[in-house]
Image (tube, rainbow, N blue to C red):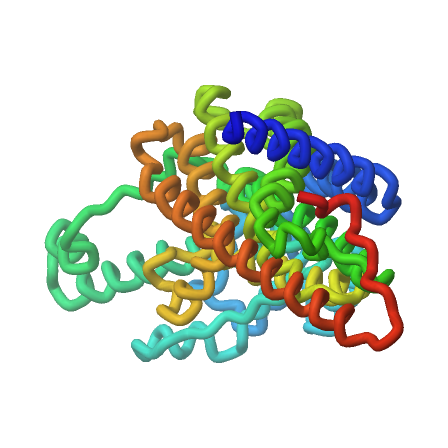
Length: 416
């Protein structure tokens, strides 16, 4: 009977904390903006900005000071690529810059006067490019168009030099490219920036908005001399589990709704790859959201001012994005930053989501990421419990040490 009574009390207290946390969330305008407006607006905004994902036949201007056969052949190949279209030839770089400032072209190719003469002497030729950085896609198109053309031109020039040295065509081709290679990009054949970027950004939005919203709420309460860590003295800190799990259930309820929209509805709405079964995505969401909750509870204990959240937004979000490995091979990330990446749930959540939804893997193929998220969840739950226990002791000592002052009434959200 005693065990049943304790269990009933535990569930009753847990439910009170759960309900009160929901009330705090839905009565704070800043938290609502971050959770719902920001959490749902960012994925839509990103997809609208990169709606097409690719830019074809981008207009560029050419300044050809060489005018030789090599430069003409190179520029003809650039014009034939999918990425670039030579709109006009200019007499000077200043003229080309004027066209770019007017928005008539989005890139400039500058061929120096010694380009053909250097290649004729067997030396290295240099070509300069200038891209309109109002959109990253312009830079991508100009770089890909000129770089791929340059690689093809290098092979042709080397073949011509071997042929001039007396080698037949087949031997010259084998000397230039002894091993034939074929490029195959099965998951993003069109080099779409939308598929490349959005797949990593979607789950990062869940982590970041949860952390900023919860930290904003925690900072507000601490500014008002209230805290989630303050608990009735008779429990002496033994109600920490009810506080963490009650608050966590509130965030789980909120983010299962928004997370489902972000991970399932947004990709369907904007025609992003969806190669995973929706049930696998939901399983990933449950583990990922749980990891993010305890991650948030742990690090939000360091937030004592409401404004601190907005400072962190600018510094932490780009770092978390690049540490997921979506734009750079994980094996090429320095070891120090790999250890830093292990602090964030997004590192493993985003990788698992990309492998499932974009590459069409199964849950068995992302067990490493799931194991990492489980370890993170356990570690952050322990750290959050320790942080609340220490803060509770500090608040209790502070209230006892105030002469002639009554101990502050515990906040309803944290009654165990």
